[in-house]
Amino acid sequence: MIEKHYDVVIVGSGAGGGTVAEELGELARAGKKVLVLEKGPRFTDDEFDGHELSMAPALYADEGGFLTAEGTMTLAFGSAYGGSTVVYTGTSMQPPERIIRRWGVPGLDFSDLASRAEKYAAENGVHLLPHALLNENNLLFVEGCEKAGYKAEQFPINVRGCRGSSLCNLGCPNAAKQGTHRVQLPAAERAGVEVVTRAEAIRIEERALLVRVQEKKPCAKGLPSEWAPGEYRIRAGAMVLAGSAIGTPALLLRSELPGISKRVGEGFTCHPAHILAAEHSRAITNDVGHPKSFFLDRSEEEGFLLETCMYFPFTTAKNLAGFGAPHSQLMHAFPRLQMILVLACDKAVPGNRITVDRAGKPVVHYRFTPSVIASLIAATRTSARIFFAAGAVRVHAPSADPPLLENSEISGIDERIHERHFKEGKISVSAAHLMGGCGMGSDLSDSVTDSYGRVHGIPWLRVADASLFPDSLEINPYLTIMALAGRVAGKMLEERPWQ
Image 1 (cartoon, rainbow, N blue to C red):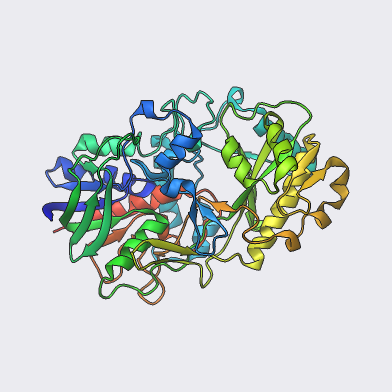
Image 2: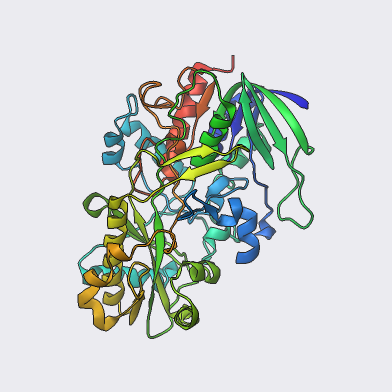
């Protein structure tokens, strides 16, 4: 066991960990030792080749196929230098005031959170894409919304020099997406913060962390770790956990720290989602340009969001219901497909939580509540109307039986798309907005941390990722995670818990 000593150790390098690392750069400049540990590898720019079957295994945990314990939903989250900011589409939404106020976390001031989010939005170049980079897949959504009586809104995204490769979910091949791997982490390293990749945090002890550094496998993408492979005990004055809504609760559960809240792992939410596709009579530009430029927010009224999307052939194929000739026919129509991602705004409910198995690996328990199923059905019906209003000739809806609806059936959408056809385990549902598990609150009885990510009863331990959310955010969480992480880092600089 190799022993090392640091003033602050940060576990995770995504939106939370990367932000904390940048903010603590002043400590490194002042001579303090600050370390970031990332389980995934660091990639060189030339390795982002856009090949679906090679990039997904390299960038995602479990190759993007992490299954819930019930086997009814896959969870997608990045495992790389930069975390999931490497593989998401760059959508950057301000924290919604009504949600932050509804959370009711003592000490969490919305105006403070909003100003921090604005700071990181400016730092990462968040803006609206010009019309020239909007493909027909997105413009048809806008047209369909208008004709169906809705108003689509444009996503602000954090790109500089986007060339419209449409490969955001496989890591931008043009270095355009401004995730923490492009902005916060390089700034932290320039300040003297040390980053070690392929380093998995195994267990927390009293002001110490057990870490396993993995050797790079032959022919694997990514650089070797900055440290020699092996087992390490890293002693630290303070720790910040930012390993995701799955990784952070799992690490705390493995560690069994005395006095920690029994609510670790509770309150998991994820915006369950699935892909809808519609076929047009002509080819449309769908796999060039930015894939996700518009959305329809029905979260407050009907509990769902609709987002434009375009997924690659393999991902599309596994999300379409059916087999044989009908499935093959729809896939052969790929150049004519328009797509919408439907997301349900779920709530934290008992039973939906993170646990660990006997080997200490994370297990996600998640059951769809009647309200989530109702939201997905309402979202699918709305999407079908938008597709047809935009000129689609047929719509593929997994919660219809059979799943293909012709334009002539538009009057029967409510009957064809129905809760009775939502069969758990038979409809491909996925989620990428993973939240909760170390929720903020007042004390040990109702939460794991306070509003500054301080773990109740353990003054040297903080949390700074989406696991802090006490309930669903109901929008894409990227900027809110950064804003919360900035609060965590700012309070640490004030309190200096490593001393």
